[in-house]
Image: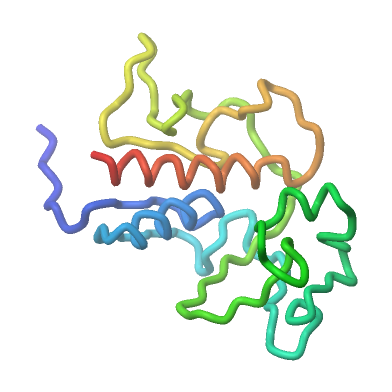
Length: 173
């Protein structure tokens, strides 16, 4: 007979990859009590070693410039940026704490054969009904690419997106 687990948190996230971190962060910001567990010695899963950039005072971001990627460098980009933000609607320094970061690393691992999920990242039974309270993201869910692999890093976007969707579903109850 299975023993019930004690209710020690609102959301238990198993795995600290990009998707798990996105889910944990989204749920925590919404005020839920989140427990994040990871079997490895470091967080990040297969995405653990990517570099990142902090827009610090005195940098190009303060001036609204992006010398590396030229964000906001043409009319199209400026149109889809933050309307009314000057001098560049696509660039701004981060000035209000709290600050959080997740180290990401693009890699060539990926799977198309994970757990089948719906649009809220809820794991689906063979009959298509969701298993209440069980969500899967990242390499644990079936690939949104339908068995194709366009290139390294393709799992990052869906992992982050479905991590947030899973947390929003749990927040909504």
